[in-house]
Amino acid sequence: MLEEIRSLSDEQLNEYIETFQDRVESTRDYLDDADDYTVSMVMRGKLQEYSHKLQLLREERARRNKSSVNEHPARPSGVKITRENQVKTYQVYIKCPDFLERIPYINNPVYRRDLSEDFLGRKSMLCKQDCLFPTCPFYDQWSIDNRVIYHPDDYDEWVVQGYEDRFKKKS
Image (cartoon, rainbow, N blue to C red; front, top):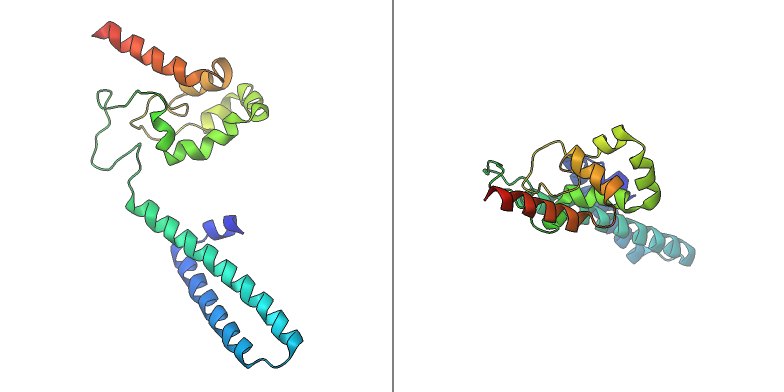
């Protein structure tokens, strides 16, 4: 049910919220006037169902409003991404919603094994835009290859150490 709700457009979501608000109100009014016990029990079940759906719809609207207000942490508006302002510290990318969406797939050993054999599958998991977190496993092909194939258990320590070593030599 959550997938259905998330697939709704904003306009559809608002229409569904209005519809279920009306259903909840109508069902409550009907329950106040119901005399038959069997009908009353059926209507209580419907009221519970409609109330639950209305709650899920409202939560989705709140989630969308919150995410539209908050900036994307990896690609804040008005910030030109350069190598100098990228953050290369330990697991800084964890606050990125794109990372949080993709990482459960890589953390599963079965899927990780499948990915290690599937170049195009790994490539499809990469972020399509540049971001402030170059240590993220989804930053580039090199990163995801190392996270999936060579460093599945010590990637974070390995990649941060690599960046530190690289930039110490240039300084």
